[in-house]
Length: 396
Image 1 (cartoon, helix red, strand yellow):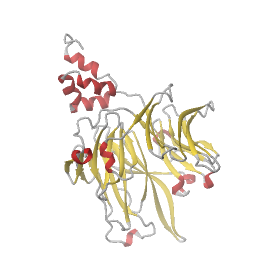
Image 2: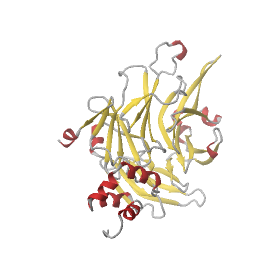
Image 3: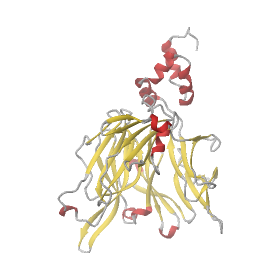
Image 4: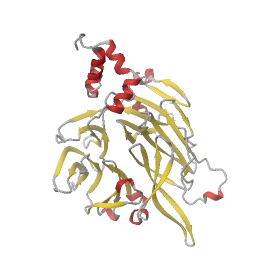
């Protein structure tokens, strides 16, 4: 860019660039690199810049079962604008990682490392940056488990990890146990440490959590299970637990009877546009139903769609509201496979993503490109408030 153009105007032009060219332009000059790498620029870019939505699709390759990651533009060109991703080196420390959440263009993986410590790895796939976070856990073999959620605070752009320790055995009488290590802890990347949440409005100790979660407008949603004592014993019902990533307050959303009283393993949650969605798989794999919460009003769930087919399952939604569906193809005498399609419920049109995968292996997450983590050092792991660089181990 011409030196005759004032740097302030150059800065305004740079702010409007997509992420990939922006990263490349860091090599043009030291002033540009200094600007783009600065925390104020990253925060402003992440807050003000409106990136087009993409879809992060994960699946197992049917030939070698290797996990694949593809980002697809969620627009009229679908599925032709594809980008293949590989996770940053730090993610290789995890044994068998799974994605527990996506938010503001960041992806959070979770599993144990080679030493047996639980660890989350927060990744920016667009710029191949990542940070690791050791998640404090209880000794194995206890009657307690943890659920971990991830999201980015919309006001501060600070990535947060939320950990809840709860009783696994749903038949234990919570009131009769005097020493339950039930607790909620929050990790913030800005401090690099775990702490108690700001708010004292914590969820009930009797809740049993599902790892299935989604972030919508700065609120983290989990599926959960609770029970009430009756003359016939303890009766369980499904509900949704919320966590505001700014105020750090918990809340509850009660479901209609058709969802509250079904087996918890038949439910999953997602989002369409900015609305919470609950997906119910019918008994004996006879299809699924889709419920959406209207106007963010609890218990205002309306069933908007039903498909009765044992070979179809909902994996997510496009930004225009179309369903993304995995279709299993049966091959007698061979391994079954799957394809991914999007379905317009109004026109009944079907659009193939042109990806073949092992059966039941597709996962789909809404995704945008972001600069978050650009100002973080490479190969850093946070453990008990201390940051340790792992570059030598990873590059060996």
